[in-house]
Amino acid sequence: MKQIKIKRKKTVLHKIFVKICRLLGYEIIDQSNLFLPVSNESGDGYISIQGKKSITIPHGVVKIQRPVKSLDIIIRTCASVKMLSQSKERLFEKEKFIYSLSTLKSIINAIKFSKDKLKNIPISITIIDHKSEKKIIDIFKSILKEADIKSTIVDLDFNKYKNQIKETNEENKKVHVNQLSNMSNINQSLELGKTFNDLIYFVEDDYIHSKESILEMVLAYEKLATQLNNELFLCPADYPYLYNETEPTSILLGDKFHWRRVNQTLCTFLTSNTLLKKYFSELTGMCKYEHYPFEKPLHKIYEKEYCFSPIPSLAMHCTNINSVYGLPPNFNWKQVWEENEFKF
Image (cartoon, rainbow, N blue to C red; front, top):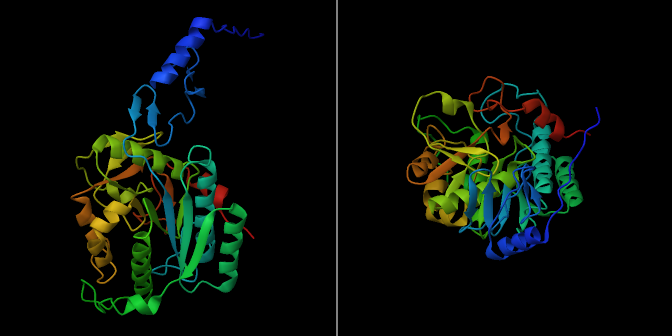
């Protein structure tokens, strides 16, 4: 049967009304087709305006009081180490460098997806690398050059930081050499983060991101920080271990995702330069003494500051299949991996 589409003609009064709403900063919606004439956007798309207002149907409009000015991404890479402190195979059973390259590829894909909506935010990528082979570094450079994103690759100054680390950890065991590298890299990335202006995203090289991740984190940060009148921590992964216990929490609405307040994360997180400087001593405390759990100083900060993770997840941590720190629930892990897996 042929469908008959009825096109409603816009009257002069309608056009004038839309112009007045635009001048006054009001948003309206045509409920017959979910079109927003003021923004000239479809209601089922990304209709928030970065830095100005968050729009969620039918939640309405939140005027942004805490606009994001810039986003700097620091990726800690070590493509030569299979696992930090164990010998199990990672999910998909690839060589470690594949995860490092796929992490970078997924972040670049997410930046490209957000390009139109975040066009006023300068975004950069810094890779701090430790002992990856030259051919892998060359591939990093090639990927970044093709992406045309402001970027740099620096070597980890391992000798500078390893001497600051206590030889024995909280369990009175000798700190593993791979952990020494990891702690040194975190330390260097935190110091670098202090030189950036606004949001810094610290990420390990085995987190594969969905295409919506960067856009959602920026828009959610603006909205939640505005509503709470406070700076935040955001974690892109909805870790399965956070559901092991029944405990009260808060659920807030971001742009397209729900965000749940959590009191634990691993060392992949996004925060502001303000909070980084405020808690710099506590954060670098993770880099000088191996606590148990490793992220204990970070969790202490979350007792005083807001930290949220998305529902569903925006990234998956590619550890082994049985890890409670790995595959997030209700996440299309196969599709996200296939979209971002680096192949020669």
